Length: 115
Length: 118
Image (cartoon, rainbow over all chains, first blue to last red; front, side, top):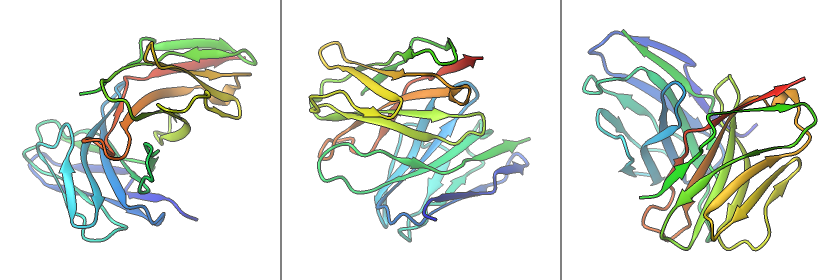
């Protein structure tokens, strides 16, 4: 079955620790994205990558870092510099467009709690 | 920067009735796409429907249709024959088409919580 996997579903960390969230896709998609969602809010883009070994900052990149060494994988590190890391994190991917805008497909998300 | 507005924090509908969820957007670009996603309480985001800015006909996918009024910059989602399983958060999204400076970035509205009553 093709899809996007994020693990773990729930993650707990102590304040001051870096934590890495995994995102893997087997859809052969070129582009991958990370979003953050706070309770009752919409999604905000953290980082995105259109191609391997390249990525761009989204709207709220401060305190986060990413890497894109493989097409299938786009891990997100939440660093200790992120002031309010507790949130729901969603990873998405999309294929390369032939002209129009492209829908993104999402993983099940990771709920991170930092205390 | 593009802005997406969903003015209805919550909507209620009777089972089997139709419901319209509002979405307006603000852009000066001509080539873009509009998306609707459903987010059940489990948290996953489920793609529902897409409308391209140059599409002349409104998009339809089963019970979902998108009422696209380009001049008014609105892209409302219509759900016909509501079912109990339609109860969820619904998000409208905007993305520039390929070649745009912000290609790939999907900007979402704040969402509308839909509750379907039996």
